[in-house]
Image 1 (tube, rainbow, N blue to C red):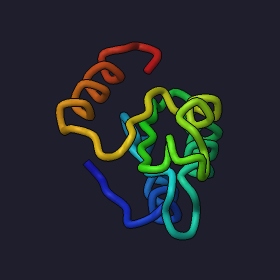
Image 2: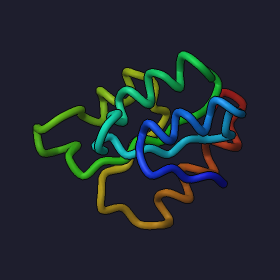
Image 3: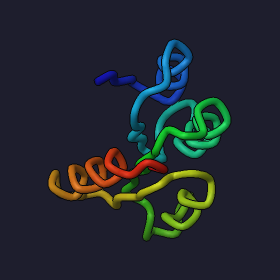
Image 4: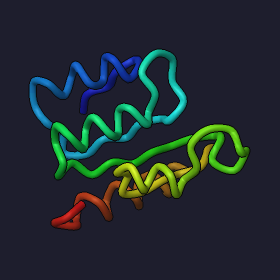
Length: 98
């Protein structure tokens, strides 16, 4: 598992090798999660992505539907339970298409 402190560092980390799965927050300093998703889909189109956000229902920023439209396979609204994240990870890694 690799972690990155922000979107810029995350994108730099995937230049070396594509991850098996990406989990990204949508609202980060610097490069946004939406940009990370779009760029990941361009660089590594087969990598499944989980987008997380505390703002999906707030009307501020990208909605869950919007995140899926740009390439997220799953979305989780904060706060979410660990089991919800685990379920999404297992489902995406088990699916040949992500």
